[in-house]
Length: 185
Image (cartoon, rainbow, N blue to C red; front, side):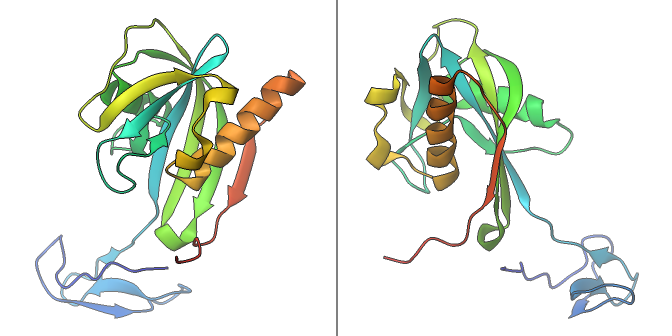
């Protein structure tokens, strides 16, 4: 797990030291002046699986990482928003698509990247969508049309595989997992 190096306290500007606080089980950045403990916690990556009839809306990424590959609309949750608000905002930003949020569908922990990915099922409210600034292209795909070898991120690929399998069974359930770092190529 990577720890972001902090040299100065964001609260008072004094130097910090990296040590284990009393009654804690791991080292933290602690201000030597004001004593503030600066915790570093995983980033929440929130997205949606926008459905229209038997198709799913995917976005081709216009940014790194994984530029040019396909993904579901999603991104980092902002302070002050709920997870469902984040999914709605990210879908609008990346695909200019309006959705009705559904149930939480999948959760993947990526401790090597300090991230937790949450995806909600969602229904497209209309077919008025198009690429936002972070997308090259936005398109609806049936299961047989999904560019499986061009999916940008493992949590997206696994969620889509589960989604289509659940749809064939006629029953959707919640999926979760923990993903280790991918092998280096």
